[in-house]
Image 1 (tube, rainbow, N blue to C red):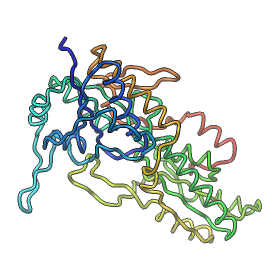
Image 2 (image 1 turned 30 degrees about the vertical axis):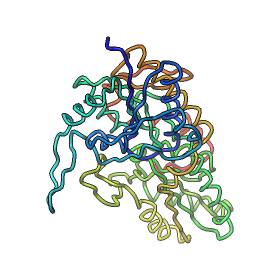
Image 3 (image 1 turned 90 degrees about the horizontal axis):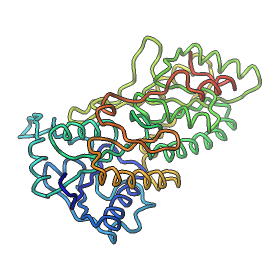
Image 4 (image 1 turned 180 degrees about the vertical axis):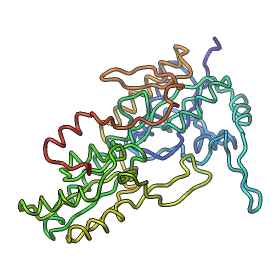
Length: 363
C-alpha cells in the first residue's frame, strides 16, 4: 500500500458546531503522531473543483476548538457529479469528478477526509469507487446519518432549541397563548423530539408521525379545561399532516437538497387559532441552531471522531466512515451510509416516555 505522506481534509454541506474540533484533531494527530502534512480544502468540494486549498499546521488550528462554523468554509451547492455551470443566463449541470480527481493527484493527497452529512458522504463514496482513498466523518445537527447513533452538532442544536422553549414558556404563561417553536431536521425529527422533551413541550410534531390538527386542538382544549392556560408546541420543519405534505419555503435547483423546508409553524398556528380560539404565536429557530460555540459534548465527540479517522487512515481502512455505536467508535462502510437518512423509529423509548407523560404527537 502506498505510504501516506499528505492528507487532505474538507467540510461540506451545512455548517455545524464542532467542525473545527474535528479539523483540529485530524490536523494535530496527523502531524504530531505520524508526521503527515495536512492540506485544508476550502469550501468543500468546490475547493477541489477550483483548486483552492491551504496548508494546515499546528499553529493555524490552535485556538479553534471553541469556534463555531468551519475555518475551511463550506457549501452545499458543489456536488462534483452534478456541478452547476452558468454561462450567461443558462445553468447546466456537469460531471466534474474527473477535475476533482486530477486536482487531488496534483496536490499529491494520499487520503481525503470528508466531513459532512449524508449528501457529502454519498459523494465521498462515489469518489472512493473511482479510486480515491477516502475516510468519512459524520456531521449534521439533524442527527440523521445512517451507521451512527449520534453526530456532532446535534447536542449543540438541541441545547439551543431547548433554551428557546424555556424562554417561550414564560411569555406563553404570561399571555395565555399557544406558542409554536419550529426547529430544523429535514425529514428526521431528532431535534424536535429531544428538545421538545428537554424543554417540556406539550405537543411535539415530527416527520415520522403525521399529525391531525383536530387531535392537537382537542389536546389543547383539554389542557385548558384542566386549568392549563398556555401550550408549547415543538414542530420539526418536515412535519406534515395525515394525508398531506410538507410545507416548502422555496426550491433551490443547484443545492444538494433542492427542497428548502420552512413555515410549517405558520400554517399550524393559523389553523390552531381558528380551532381553539386561543391566540397563537410562532418562532422559527432556523440557523440559530447551527451557529455559535459547540457544546462541550460536541467538542469532545468531534475530537474523538477526528482522532479515530486518522487511525483508520493509518490502518488503510478507506471507503468507510467513523461511526458511534453505544460507547464504541466503529467503522461503517460508506456504501451503507449512502443508503438514505436515519429517521426516528416509531418505537423509540423517548416517544413512549413522552406519551406516558401526556405529550401529544398529533395522532
